[in-house]
Image 1: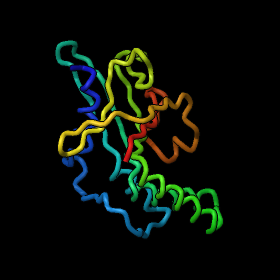
Image 2: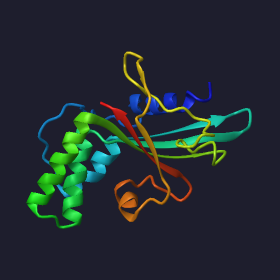
Image 3: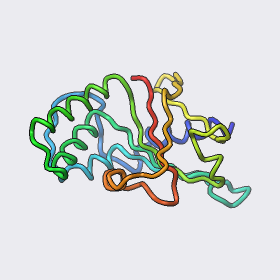
Length: 176
């Protein structure tokens, strides 16, 4: 039961809109963003959730997950290109590659902290958590890749503010 809890927690975090009332769309299409749009887009596609074990009077897990949607990737590239003064051609190339990737895979940037460090390593063999992507019909998909980011870069910390020295960081990839 505990193994499927993380999947349920991630699914609940993304399904719940009580904390994030603004509507979001999964539809691809042209977007118009400025570099200043990134924080609000990041916030729209990021969910935070925690589980508290009353029996132990302790938090079991804190999870923050950003779904790298079509819209998120567009805003990310616009902000990244601005921050690094990319030429328009380089920006457009980066954008096209990122959007093409979004058609092939679903990516999540996840940070979490749990009661036990080894059990909270989603990529480890001793992980207490099982990661699944659950669609509205209840179909479960296992990730193609769970990559532990051992040392998040400065870029990770700037573009994903949930990165913290107290949390482990992961990149999850699912088939589209």
